[in-house]
Image (cartoon, rainbow, N blue to C red; front, side):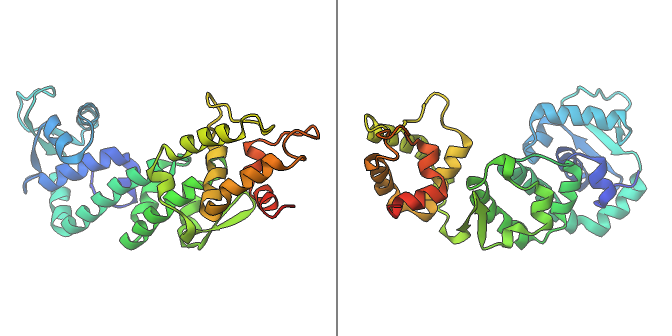
Length: 281
């Protein structure tokens, strides 16, 4: 088996297995032998210990590696293992050591961006390959763009990550959400850095509208993703108007229950409604 960072390598191993394999290849000697300790590999790669143990056992079963000592136990704390096709490995190591380090970083980055993006749809191995094909500065720009994109879009309406990359969405100057365009430059990182910002705002909203006829938010199960997104949009575009819009809605007989209709958070913060209330329409 020729281990290379080609599409075959990316398809054969999961992202976590790739990290372990990369570590083993880079630490092996010229004969393809490496001192293996599950805990040491876990510490070096950041992969949880139990996952390393599982991957270790799999590599042995599939003859990717073999015990270099006949009396070695797969459960031993420390042992030596060899790659089963050492010759192909040695040539690979001489050719691509630097590139291997770069790709190892890219694979680790993918795990982070995959978790940050949230919408985990698609074949992970294909996505890792696509991610690794991007230039490092492109990946950095994606890391800068994704927090805003995630904060301003519900997961169900978010593009699949493959589409996000293929369409180079991170290059857009505006994020289109709820029939409105939010300029990327208006995004406030505080929306994702402070997890208490939205719940605290909803509590203040409820206190303010209590007794006014406006329907308060159920704090037990009302902190929905959609409401968070609506708040984030208003926070980005109309930060200074939020308090005034709520007060206008409370005074408006068409919204405060005087004529039978009681507006709620969803209605007030729907972007087009928010603008109409702000403008007194």
